[in-house]
Length: 250
Ligand code: PEP
Image (cartoon, rainbow, N blue to C red; front, side, top):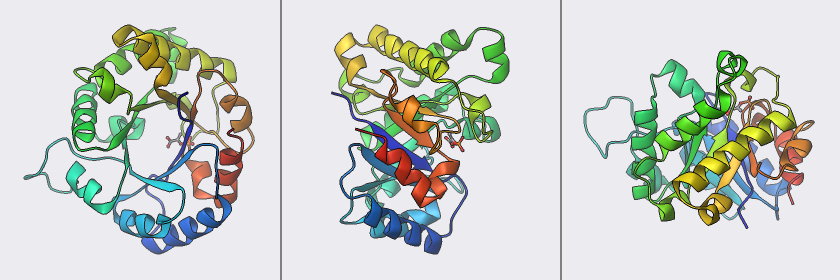
């Protein structure tokens, strides 16, 4: 059985003090979830989040990392640095990084390989723009992104990856994909994983939906066969909303 993973993506929100308060409250409210609970936080918050999450069920993730081990990459953070802090997950290829920071399928692949080499669990984001959806190329585009992200990644490493299907037009817009749209593309991703690896591997990989998932719509999305959790932006900034989503699992 594959794991359901509910992951918050705080983006550029919360100071370390705010992060600590949030995690302390979340830890008291989420004791025995039926899913893996992850908070992906800005680099400067990670130390506070790891310390506040200690002894709780909450796992910690970063929102990005560099694919090189070290060197002259001003402003960047390596996988070793994240691991040394107690970070377990890392978001790779979020559409905001692809759009604003020139992240490409090639760098996504390099980062995923490096994360796995260092023992981090990558959450790899894929998803189409509105114009791609309107042109009818969503399935092909997302399948291609999935293949490129996983290039040269072995079957055993692929089993440690989470794929987040995030239609770009649904991120931060308040417009959510319908359950049918989300399920169809998550099914395409699973079929692509089966093509690259095999059916058993494809069935074992967690595929999340992300894009304006919230306390009102998460229940229906999480009931779908191929949706194994959520990558949640806005609704992960409010403890009670995030808890409501977690409680829909199981
Ligand atoms: C995200 O940041 O990955 C995301 C899905 O954001 P939101 O839930 O706010 O749409």
